[in-house]
Length: 434
Image 1 (cartoon, rainbow, N blue to C red):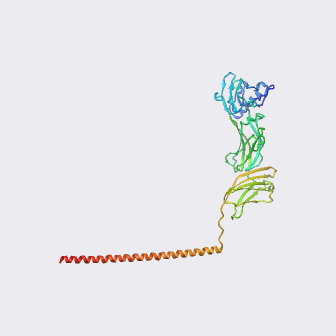
Image 2 (tube, rainbow, N blue to C red):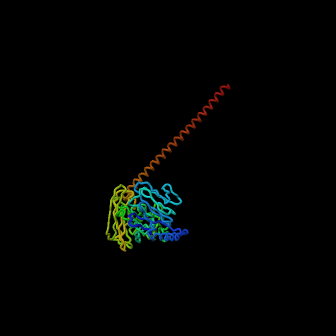
Image 3 (tube, rainbow, N blue to C red):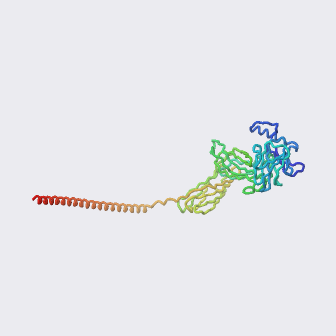
């Protein structure tokens, strides 16, 4: 496999072969064929030093048997991309190169260049190459991490360390590690016997070597991942997804079983304003030692107040933690859990989305005296309503009678007027005839 090489006292970093195949090897596509080609090609550089790729200053030589090579050049920060000068004197730039033969990725601090069927002979790289991190040939990149414990628990948090390899060598160039990202996904095995059948993949961690968070030292070659298994219980594959500017690699581990968290939390809401709520805690003593349980919690109340609580070495479960009844509304509780499994494994879990809504309790039931008073008031109200209804009916009846009388009087008056008018007209007619 590819290694950092030196030749006859050269202090420069050697180049690693990414993938190459001899012209005598003509294989069809397929995973097994590719592996065979790689093995045969790699055998070319296991021999004498003439088959290695030492770099002298900014010059290097590519052997005629190399079919493909991936070069990684580190530049001084902020410098312009490199220029590659071929053995025939022609030049390739990051913006001008044969796209069918070359893949070129440039970053403010480095260039990665993959070349198919490179021209044999002496090459040069023109540019401000970092003197401390000159060049690499990217080889068989792989990542090896500590095995995950089993079983795992839902919402468990755990620290896992791993190392990045280029070929058979641990990567020691800090800037090379900066070109790689390592994400961790949990992908369901889609086993119908488990509750996570059909679950979507979940991104649970990222491996870093930056000296921050749970990573102890920056650039020490040890990548640290901090897992938060906020996934459904079930059977999963732990998938480490490694991404470089030119390609991706995936490494799978498992299957792994994630069990439900062996500590359960339930809120018992108070029935009276003056009483506290209760956080009821139960444990699965078939999974963990109950006396090993340590819980730290923080409650954010609807009125904005924050209060903390903690308990440990509980003699008997279920155990209840009082939560002050300060206000009605949504309560948010963050809970850190520390415990020891029955087989002696220490584990830590965190719940940061546990919540409950406190509602205002209904008013208390009235006493017998209050019920009697309410009935008396209701009876008086009903009697008053009935009295008002009778008065309204009597008033309406009187109005109806007045209307009837007035109508009758009007009819009689009209009739008398009509009779008078008829007699008056008749007398007038008789006088005229006489």
